[in-house]
Image (cartoon, rainbow, N blue to C red; front, top):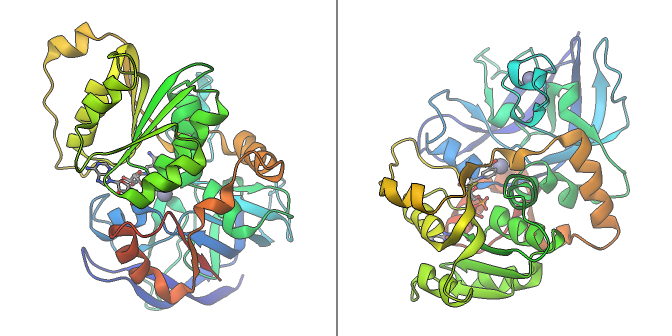
Length: 362
Ligand SMILES: NC(=O)c1ccc[n+]([C@@H]2O[C@H](COP(=O)([O-])OP(=O)(O)OC[C@H]3O[C@@H](n4cnc5c(N)ncnc54)[C@H](O)[C@@H]3O)[C@@H](O)[C@H]2O)c1
Ligand SMILES: [Zn+2]
Ligand SMILES: [Zn+2]
């Protein structure tokens, strides 16, 4: 079996700028697929990795929002073959864990990943972000992480389904259970939050309130279906949301920042018996304090959304269909296309709020 030397973007140490360097990607073993990456979006979770906010398992091979073409498959692979256009998923249910056996594969506790490591030339194993690692020309995944979709879709747009778009859409449609006639607020309208806005519209919500501290994000939110926008730098978002909902608050409040302040806003902005969905990823040091009587007295449910509670094999092809029918404007999430050397600068633009998604084109 061969080993492929390619260029990849790694995060070597907490807080240090990312580096473009040589990495070694083995040919696929049993059950694995080698994928030639065509496009990979820059998600805020990549920045969380490089800040050490996910775990300490440096060095990371970053990038996890990708589409590409299967190059080779290992023994026993039946779901894809060389030449297939695929979106990479960071959830590939094992079918065997206690959650899969209970018929809830979207919570799978033993999601599948490649067995062989990708390494630096000196043999140091890399931790691939979310079990993918796709800011590189070739990546090795479990074949079940590669979901075949229509090859007519643009790679830049399709790749976004692999994380941010699915997480946001699913937070509204699956976790939040948004349905016809609901009122929804989305706090934090980056790539994930604006996908939640789009998901709320697809699900038939009649009031969709977008909240952000950045006016550009709110302008984008209107294009994805927000009926109202609130800039929370100068307006109390809880009061504004109540004012827009007859004083009651929304049925579903979605937090897409990952911050105690915005979580609390979501908590108080929902109506009685409503649902709060946390899709933003908090830093492990963050804490919240809420009066227990408010948790009880408001009823409803407080939920977290991992990957929009999606099933990639079911949902990715469906979202590509919606895209091709003109019902889900994935291209509108792609603010810019960049080269593989541009990830660090893309993080800076993300922090300044200038982009919904920068997409690395290989
Ligand atoms: N749960 C999941 O499965 C999942 C998947 C992907 C990403 N995420 C997480 O979702 C979050 C958002 O990711 P993203 O890629 O959209 O990031 P992003 O940087 O593109 O968007 C974040 C948005 O939040 C806004 N914001 C920041 N502080 C705010 C505040 N105090 N009030 C209102 N808005 C505020 C920013 O202006 C920006 O528009 C991140 O924490 C990311 O790690 C979660
Ligand atoms: Zn499982
Ligand atoms: Zn992501």
